[in-house]
Image (tube, rainbow, N blue to C red; front, side, top):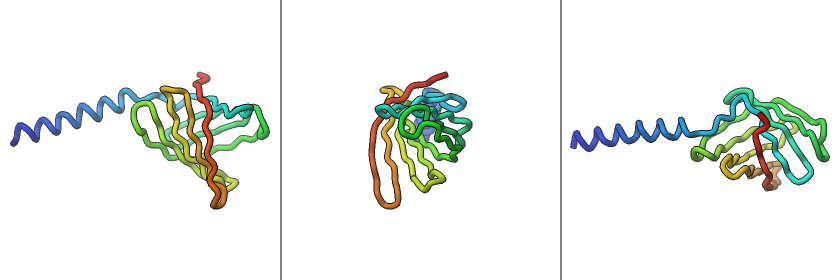
Length: 122
């Protein structure tokens, strides 16, 4: 029984180390989000702060600093969420492996969903 418990502890340490070391590094980097004609540059300044700017499309020139929460789904997929100053709630899954962002926006009680492409700029 002691042997089995030791194996479980060792396995959990190994798995924890693997998931952390294999995750995509995004902090300090800028991602380009593209939704059709709309393009945003999103820079992750820390593990809780980011800023974005619309560089093409209907919102060109809009920019904001945001405080976000993030959690890894697996080593290639990051769930992030934040509330914008205009009241919009944003929830996204960033799929780094496939270059896709899955987007859910909450305006008042209306939810809209969308999908776009992502790529690192730097």
